[in-house]
Picture 1 (cartoon, helix red, strand yellow):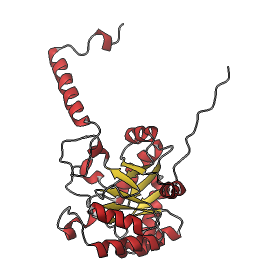
Picture 2 (cartoon, one colour; picture 1 turned 60 degrees about the vertical axis):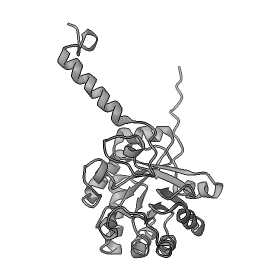
Picture 3 (tube, one colour; picture 1 turned 90 degrees about the horizontal axis):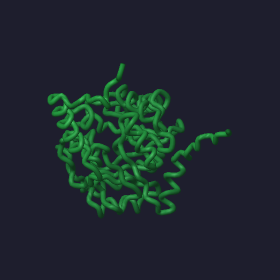
Length: 271
């Protein structure tokens, strides 16, 4: 009996990202930090899996992302990249991995691609990081920009605050384009400004708290599925409540163990 070879899904690439904008098809992005999560997101049909430095908050329990190291980002990228057959894997460059010099940015981006297996990297900032973006893209490493509320600038911004300086944001977006990025995240801006940024650039915009006018949307996995007990921003819509299910399941397990009803005969080996 002959067997058919497994069907390998067509990977989502930089070119697909650009053609999606041209065709008016929204791009869907979710963060991922481990193999089983990435496997499920890939099977569900997510376009891009972002290995976000948000792992500092949602995985490590820190109040911000500034503590995350490059080695930690590579470690988590390896897990996601092993599972992603269709999705593009984009990895955040963490704080102080690209700010010192364009050469430093290129070397660290190369590590993320070579060691982690990512398809692209993401940098925060616009005008101030344009030289780093240009150095990386000159080496044929795709870069996704990130303008608006840039979480690595939390201390300069005085917290996680909506960004409303239109002139600065439009200048940042233009700088990202001119430096060679293939797309950009637009975070934490009024919806009208998110739409203006999108209309003013030739590359796809991925919104998070930036309204429906962007070319795509990204959410953090733990927010999307209420995995964990923290508060969630206004712009988050949750599509399941894993936290409640896990709490309820854990309480049932505790009760059954303490009552002696688990393991029963159906969950034990016979001689």
